[in-house]
Image (cartoon, rainbow, N blue to C red; front, side, top):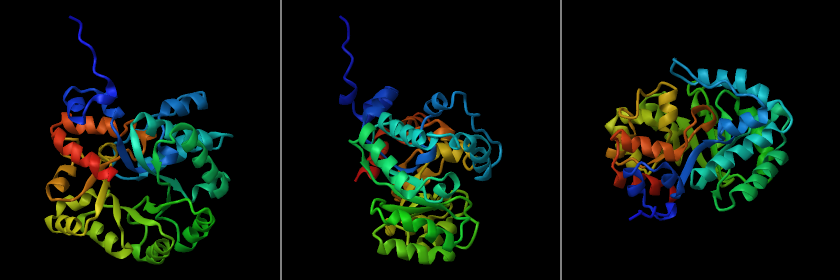
Length: 319
């Protein structure tokens, strides 16, 4: 007797993981809380628009510099073409929809407009348009991000026009963790809090455990992007857990940027075991080619988490 295949949307995460059914995993609601929208789409979508293949991202060196170099040398020429900004946003929403994302905190670089003549009005209208057209079912929480290499004055200058739209829900700092003392941004984050923005920042991506605690204390962070350096200190992990600080971790990114050797050795397991609330996120699909669903499957196949534990992590991002 011929077996009838189960409908994709009726499969639990446990069953989908056990059977290795990536399509089924993608159908299960998930969050993506650490996603840079200009780098959030699949390369295949970008390549069709570009008319040629972007050079794949590869590095043998740990750190953020190889990523920044790829953006400048490979991706920037694409972004200078007419319509490329809109195509990048469209690609990011297509990816999120295909990945089964239902809560999306996607970051728009607030400095981007000055590089490519994209106004705040154009950025906001483009995000609204593609959200409504491609994935209206997603609870979209737009985020503003800024490189840590900018001065406070420059960040405030570029932040102001975006705030006029009362659209963005959170703020993030990224790039080189050691670009300048975090105290330089204390005023920015206090101002962002008065504007009702959730406070997030990249820290502990390459830095140590104490750098994570200091960032949370200095900027009064509510969530941390990456934060995996905290796994080296039981004390800092206890502190994060007791203060309810969630870490939005990107395992594939950490591996591809040579911070972590493999899924089997990824410190997200240590963080989880010490009671730190963690989520799994995409970071930059354009560079790494891997969404949230693929990472759930890889974490399971490499024996880092059971299906029940991954269900807990999935729910961490939805509620």
